[in-house]
Length: 321
Image 1 (cartoon, rainbow, N blue to C red):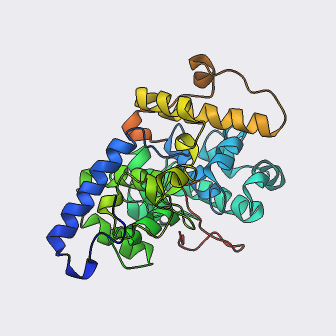
Image 2 (tube, rainbow, N blue to C red):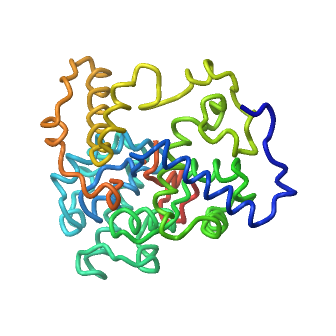
């Protein structure tokens, strides 16, 4: 394991950078063969709404909110006609609920009025929807329509800088820089893998460098805990100590990883509410709702896949992940 930064970025040629970036992607693919967008959805409408709701909150919180929301408002027409007060009550747990309520009602109205009730499948159309910028558009395109795109959330931006893939803080520039390094067919999946890694290992404040599978490829190695035992204690989600059973399930059947992750989240929510958690079963996982194709759904703390869009009371501007 390296003890200092493993590369002099100033001396790295463009070709060497591209090769290193693609190798990082390959190693992350091996580390997270089950990577997927961690917002639950069944269709493009649910994904775009869930992604807007995920601003300034976690995907876990959104996933606990959206089942009831989509049961009551299953499509754009129903949401466009929603009672504002009732909608605010339903989405209140996600935070900034008044602004989000206005945003998703306006979004639904535009989908109905301009796109016959169907979420458009083009970047130039998606970014005209209230609350939707390039990040959200790429999430929807990549995960609901199978059109590759790089989704720059806060995790992706942080890790792209640490990896030396970009020096920019601007999400659009980061997307451009990384898209020049990674094969287009990999854009959606590299987004998932990097976001997974950011949530589980390469944390903002204290990355677990000593437990990182790409330590030898990372010029930022050493900025976090390098002792392997101490680093392992910093891992989160299915990699966290005590989650070995969940990790084994997710690795053994990657096509159902989202189901296993979702069931674990529901059990954790029940435990925190003081209710006994049911034993895991495939039947229980399936009862949560259908999950689409493992590669196309990747149905994201995302991201997720999700915008940390607006900390103020306006959701109309471009996201700032």
